[in-house]
Length: 133
Image 1: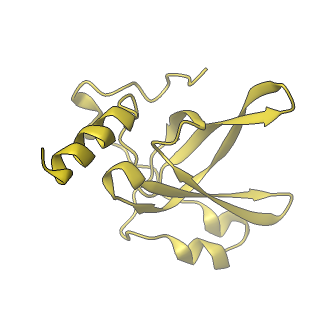
Image 2: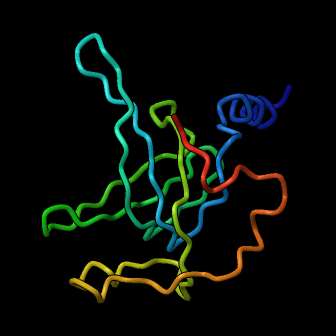
């Protein structure tokens, strides 16, 4: 057996198949498993996807939110076992692949235009309103 086929089989086993199609500009709620001592809980992290790096098993999204007047960005590996799920709350119409310009904006200037028609959710994907709990 070739090494590439072995790697592809291992990656297919580790992939999380029940994820919605995420794009840049979406407002998402990511459920992250947090371990505190003996207990584990799901902590939601809600923000706008400002960047996406596609690399099969190592695909990451950068989520930005403003918390108490300070911008906080977090990078999530979407096939990580530490993610409980991703819920898409709102989709936005954007014309760039990376929304790094939002870092310099404050207040109402951060708002993005909503996408009115959603053609991508018709192929048997999970519903946007499904909860990750």
